[in-house]
Image (cartoon, rainbow, N blue to C red; front, side, top):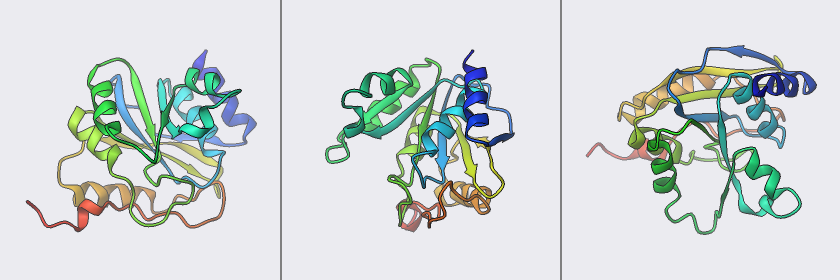
Length: 192
């Protein structure tokens, strides 16, 4: 049923699902990029559902107010207090380690069309929980979306991010606006 709904969502939004098969593991971190429009959420949910993944997604807590809060939570929404993130990464890592089926959808740019470095939580969660990163995307010029390669973080942040950058180099969001080039602050730090 979920797969049919996901394909229906993509059809209504006039996007074609392409790309690779999802990983066989029940838990993954699903990278959603680029993030340029409110359409990214229904598109990424459509991709996840059509790929038979059980998505959970992060969103700012202000959108979880009535009347949509219950609906968002039932779709897998996880409210984030951006002013006080506290133990968010640790909590999500524990959730990923639980083994319960979940594809944690994270837009590492943060807000729509973010600038500067990506937030590194997606990488740390996948590495600490030893689950694969799944590269999900939207490409407006070709009206395609889907899954790219999946891999487990190696711990070599620069090499892993080179792989991420190479994949996303030709992907463009739903709205023509600049997106943050995939990079993490950790890449700029000298090795320990």
